[in-house]
Amino acid sequence: MNYSFCVNIEKKQRVDMYLSALFWELSRSYIQKLIDTGCVTVNGQVVKKNLKLDQRDEISILEVISSTEILPENIPLDIIYEDENICVINKSPGINVHPTPGIEWKKGTMVNALLYHCRDALPVISGEQRPGIVHRLDKDTSGVIVTAKNDMYMREIAEKIKKREVKKYYIAVVSWVLTQEKFTISSDIWRHPTDRVKMTIKSPINPKHAITHGEVLGYIDETYSVIKIDLETGRTHQIRVHLASIGYPIIGDSVYGNPKVNKRAATLYQIHRQALHALEFHIDLYGKNQSFFAPLKSDMKSLLAGKVEIEKGL
Image (cartoon, rainbow, N blue to C red; front, side, top):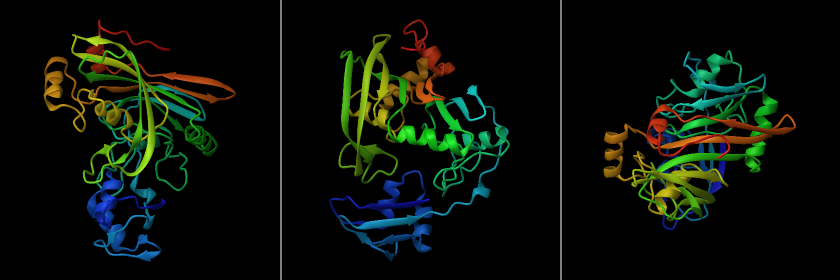
């Protein structure tokens, strides 16, 4: 994988610390190894990890990942739809979509399961070793994810997502009672400047604009709000960050949520992850609109039971 971009910072920062915040899913040691082996250049020059970056410095990264590190595994998949071109899955919470370079998470992912299911024959795009994967969900987010089984549909789906020609709807359960029936959150978002685990809307590194639309569907025990999310953009952690930014974090979210609320929800409702589910995915394929619906997983289904009905086409 190749990356090239300009630095956007308010004050000087070490290159290894900056890249650790920017690529939060990579370990610091892995990033330092990339720098030490000459895979990182600043303004065209190979650098050391303690180099101090300035505003508008140009960084280029060559990240080399061996495809032999990703092996097929017999992991069950909840398949919603499958044909010769695509495989649509209702992802379970607690599983990574793809292995992450730099850390020992090369097993137990959806990619490993797909490689086994598709007999180790899946396409990659732009040299990235994420076979079949054209979009992703966070580890603890459940729901619909579309994967490609050949190069043509890998490119086609990726291009439609890039051009925002798909619609994705989510269900989230948030802390507190949100009385505004419909709302829109619009802000810049990207990596937190100091906390490598988080994304942020406040002084983000290399900000990207994000737009989230929400509609309140109902309430749980006059304490939590059930919200349908319509994503206009698709940034990392976008829903979680945006909802937390307006004071209504998703229950169970260990990064952006309220610890006391999370503890109570875990005790009362057995919710041990962020209550966020990708419900529907709409895309034009085969000359017509394809709609894929992923029923709620058991924990969220139990949470909403008898309070809010979630059906296809909400």
